[in-house]
Length: 245
Image 1 (spheres, rainbow, N blue to C red):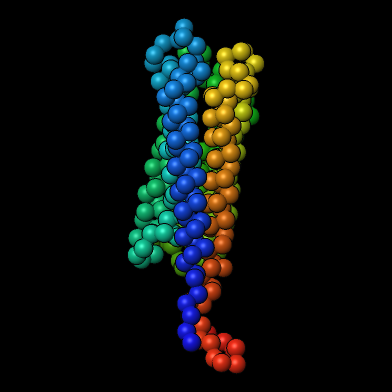
Image 2: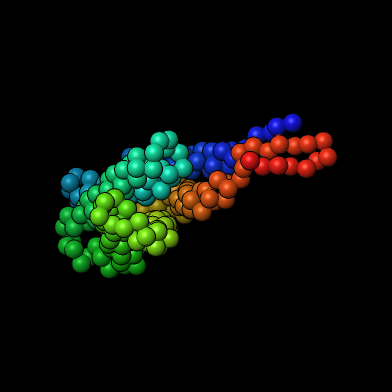
């Protein structure tokens, strides 16, 4: 009797959960940005400043975190050769890095000046995260895409590339969480938003969604080798012994 081991099931389930989490995060963020625009800036400021203020979370969460998370998962869902996966991974990470650069750029456009927007732990972590991400992208390009690098060097660099990539991704999520906490605390302290209202629920739900997404993406990445090591077929004999090809 021959039975097929469901090696693809765990990965498929994790990928589905990651997509659902990312969709939830995008919906909550867009709802917050579109229906509660008055919370981003007071009415006295210009429409231009309001647009920049709304663009910042959109670029940093959807453009940076969601797309970079998808780039991490490319090696699990994209069919085709290793070279194709590397190309799509590099391209998506480039899009995420560009979004992060523009996301930080929007904070330089405020009328209060540059220093006024880079005083908190959230801003410092954001600069650190984007800088580390840029170095990681450049080193990945030079090591894994440039043909001049020796195979042995790639093998030695790969564990560090994976670790720093996951660390940077987790740092980006934590940075977003500190930004949400900072924003919501500021709004509630100034009486703009009540502690028990729809906007507070959306922001808190957005934070939980980001935490769930981060965990699923990292779990999918670190669990992939384990799932791949499971044999695809098992041959079972009448004496309950198994032989694997």
